[in-house]
Amino acid sequence: MKFKLNSPKHFDSANPGQEACRSIDEFLEQLAEVAPEDYSHAMGYPGTNNQNMNGFYDWYVPTGMSHVFLNNAGDPFSEQPFKMSTLGVERKVIEFLAPFYGINVDNVWGIVTTGGTDGNNHGIYFGAQKLRKETGLAPVVYVSKESHYSNMRLCDLQNLEVRLVDCDIMGRMRPESLREALDPKRPALIIYSMGSTFKGAIDDQRLLNDVIDEVEPIAVHRHVDAALFGGYLPFTDKRYLVDINAMGFQSIAISGHKFFGIDMPCGLFITTKSTLEYQKAYNVGYLKGEMPMINCSRSAMAPMKFLWVIKNVGREGLERQARQILERADYLLNRLTDIGWKAWKNEHSNTVFFRHAGDEIVRRYSLAGGYDEALGGALNHAVVMQQISKELIDELIEDIRRTM
Ligand SMILES: *Cc1c(COP(=O)(O)O)cnc(C)c1O
Image 1 (cartoon, protein in one colour):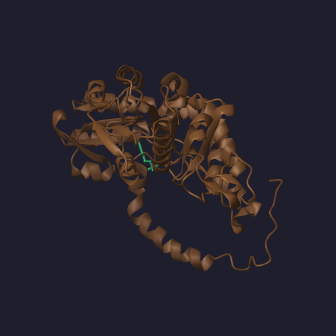
Image 2: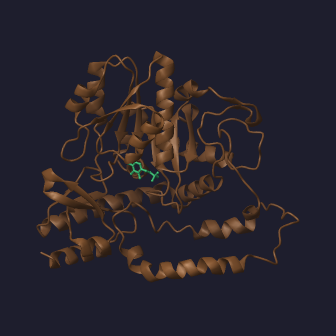
């Protein structure tokens, strides 16, 4: 550490707040009573438990940053009058990751968000703004029935008409259903799911884009909701699936606390400068310019953690983790199939869904629940994140086998 902020005079180092920590300790004790098994066995939700951010915290306090207020209000891509921010780090994160989504550093714009939902909010808002400006008409949003609920919620919030498009049995948007739903006379805002919530389906952008080309709506904007899969796909040989040039989308949302393993909710919203051009509506004098993002104050901490994880784990580390989760997802699918327990997994997905495993197992492994009549009714899924070991998978298989 070369840099150290000077302690302000009012900073009282004689009172490090240990009393207050004890109050939180009480909560941690309660957590410890229920948590050990939950912590080590939870498989139903896409959090990463083992990215190990100790090194970040060891560095953070001695810098002196823990006693100043840092705020990333403003645009990381334009010069800001307010210097107590990590907007420079935020820009670095976006520029470092842009090429992984096929976007040239010169052409990228983006922010570190509060999570996947915030990224979707920006994707939907930017898309709707652009389409309105291009056509003078409000767009219709097309999104699959199996997409994450935040998309429907956000369209409601933004007062946008939504047409929910049917899916095939594996959870992918059906091209024929999109064709039936598409209105050629209205601008189309398409949301593609890259990892639908329950079945982990990847909408086939190429097939669906062909349908859009055929129907030719008067204007189109494509946003990709890739909260979970958008973290790992760039680090596999299937990176073209989240490549803006290969797939022709205009914006993408990714969560930071899923594959990247950051220990608090955060995410990325990444788009191009040409999409940004349509957003410049609100000139904010005190922030020196146009403020395209929805939120004013934003976390200065999240970009630091993002950059730290990217640099600490590194490209090779992320590639290794991506390989590992996909191999173990295959392993889980194969083991379930071997014991004759009905199970399914989409291609390039780390989410395995299977026949409901019984309430006790669902509780023990914090499995998420779902339902599909066509697949026999009640289902569960497991999301194979970095901390899910083969031993844990074997344990789950043993537990399920005992109930058969
Ligand atoms: C998790 C998820 C979201 C929501 O992201 P948050 O980071 O929890 O806000 C949205 N879409 C998909 C596909 C997800 O997996």
